[in-house]
Image (tube, rainbow, N blue to C red; front, top):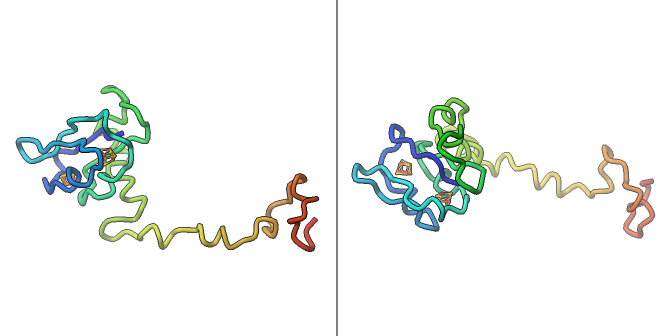
Length: 136
Ligand code: SF4
Ligand code: SF4
């Protein structure tokens, strides 16, 4: 759930206000968005992914964490490198590698499960008609 808008990092671009599918933000009087309807947040991370300055933090917890939680404390989140951490993880932003380039899923799905030499064949599959030739 959205927990933090960094007033110092925000450049008042309104992108988060526009991309939020559930209209959680209002534009504040100074242009910095305010979390106006936190309970409407669906923890989709869209705002954090799109924020160009890593000014947002969406906690992975799907309920409000409470004001005394480190997840709601900007200094703690920043110190942990988590402001904009989701955006960094997906590789969006200058100088980052897009997540699609790091995606290992095509590699994993190209390996037939029973031909993976590092895995022993589960007994429940070993006798099945789908057993690969040459694998015990
Ligand atoms: S996480 Fe999704 S639903 Fe929540 S404020 Fe951000 S964009 Fe809106
Ligand atoms: S997307 Fe980021 S920089 Fe733009 S208004 Fe929202 S918090 Fe500020």
